[in-house]
Length: 459
Image 1 (cartoon, one colour):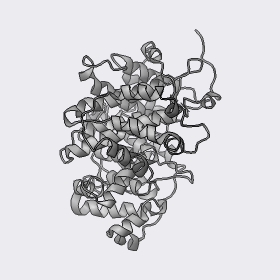
Image 2 (cartoon, rainbow, N blue to C red; image 1 turned 180 degrees about the vertical axis):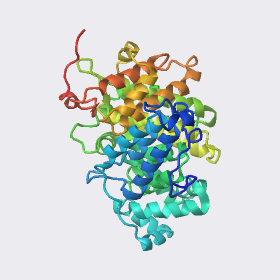
Image 3 (tube, helix red, strand yellow; image 1 turned 135 degrees about the horizontal axis):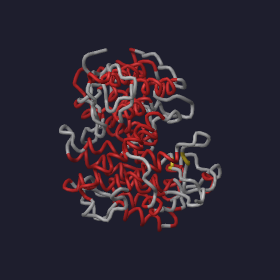
Image 4 (cartoon, rainbow, N blue to C red; image 1 turned 120 degrees about the vertical axis):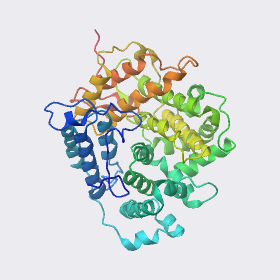
């Protein structure tokens, strides 16, 4: 194992690579021989996480089937590591996850060399079979100019640079998976994972940019205008717009692209453009975004049915944590930070509509019992054998959300306040505890999504 994290080596150090939210690092001396699960990040867990992530980097593709489902090993392992999973728990999760991964495609050195030509780079974008070549290319670039230099050139370059424009549009594609991967690489300061994220971005679809992000930004008059409406206010306006609210249909293949944008594209762009953030609003608007996506993800229930979280909404919630890191990055200019947050908020708004504009039940959250502490919930998540990373990401993002929103709690009437964060975490634990049923509901606003779930037990 390399002594430091590089473009080709994953290397986690307790106390140094702890991420935005993590349990405390445990004393190294107490970690190695303990027969019980150690409390906190340990030397042993850091070594194991580094080892399995290195194997994943070298042996697996980013997509594991023909449907385009993503390899979540990086997300899963780093989230478990941050919440204090033992080395044995990390190894067990990795063994479960790797069983269904697709093997990496061998690198073609001639193709890698050709990617330095912008026209060739653009030609190969969106082609899944080129993932290994893009990965090798970005590893070499990072070795030459560093992570910051590569990000500024290939993702955040200002002006009309076509390569950066195409890449940025794809960053939020694939249900924000490239962005989530990017977030983990940045959060845990792992250049190899940033290289993976950029390669993943390069092989994703491009409709999100030309059909949504760039037109919405143009309608907003550019980047960084002061947001006069809260994200929740815009969400409520969208709910009342009947054409937009009913634009997604159950049978749509991609409910954002083939539903919302196909049937109510003008309306969606109009509301998306209303979500803007100015420089002085940045930290507050990050907290507002987190609060809003936690609200609609957890409150989108069916009172007649058992509690379940929507699988698609999870991605908005789980990706929210990275903005607590992004807005503090010294090498990113303010305009880029504002654009990333505006795009994230706009996608969150469209994602909510795309799942059938579900009713939101805030009382479900206010009254849910807090039978378990954060520590108990963290331990549950690191041991949940059916989880592929979505649950542990959810709970960690909730814990971060509580901390991010607390400074603004007395200034705004946001829906999620006080102990509701812990209540929602208890909901997440309880709703995923029955291994005989699906962990998540998929597209919660549609009646069809709830057919497989039983009625709620009345006490």
